[in-house]
Image (cartoon, rainbow, N blue to C red; front, side, top):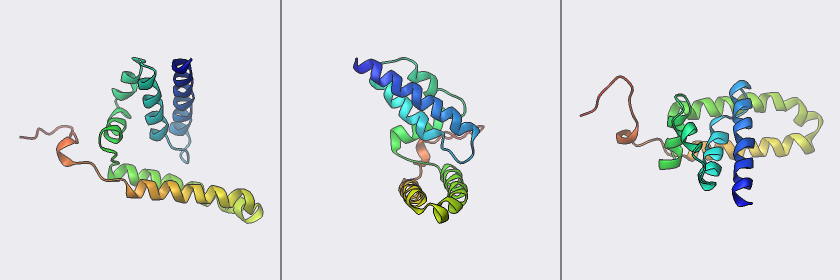
Length: 132
């Protein structure tokens, strides 16, 4: 029963991650991180598929191993949050009981992102270069 719950959660998070890859104001990587955690707890080998993904694998591993987000990742995430907040302004002005809580959640997420450390240089692979 517990494995089924984690697999169902992973499926939901992968779907949300795919939607986030298409929509610029919705996050991608955090949902894929959550999917990997669920798959790992379920003992499912498919977690490796996400960890080895050419585009999303490195940021997922980086966050799971170091709790870190690259500067580029922070700028992308904060840019998406800014776009979402700008789009939410008309809703907040007309329906403040809906828009204000959403803005608070975005501010909380932005604060979390800003406070994450940047990766340790020794652990970040640099493509095309070999380090001694």
